[in-house]
Image (cartoon, rainbow over all chains, first blue to last red; front, side, top):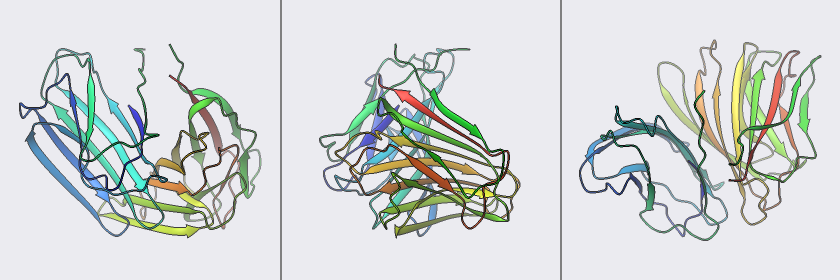
Length: 134
Length: 163
């Protein structure tokens, strides 16, 4: 998934979930992040949803960018792991996040939902690409 | 089905030079991916990009990096180029993604992943850069100031086609 998000005001937390599963504590996340002044790491387990950012702020003219890889999304023998880089910079502040999400389900992924704490604004752009098997 | 990673141009430097420019970039893709695999003349320095020959103070950058023993973060505002990569006299690899590069509504945000595998001061990094312009990107120039890009350095530009 590749996204170029425009947010109306502060981004805040951003959440994501697969196949409509957002109430069963099936997600965990680990992040490594930096805000230009310091670096940190975080973890959360048994979450109802995955996350694609912990906290951030941006402006409508300085989009937030994300690239997320979802590995073996159709494999029914393993839980699903994602990795992503999520970042924004508005000249005054900035934020970079490396993270992984685990969805504890062996189901093939057939839908992905992104849910910002606030709103996606006009001109937000998502693209989903598939990588074929070798 | 749309294709991904369409090669637009690739170059291997036959001699050392101070910069390399991709020009006349088509606006027909959704994203651009720049891959730099190369070296600069001396030490470790940044890999910088200017867009559309704009050398005004219209760029900013936030970076997260690890040295192998600790993690750091830094940023720069109102600078004359996007300091979006790292380079050294040993090998370095930088992969930079320009998202929605031809839209004329928003400023341009780019993501990069960087590493210098054999350098002890900066080992691996990720960064976000901003060019405060709504113009479509049609050219980009890569430098590693104050050093030259070295012979054998490769630059490849891919386009990701619209879905």
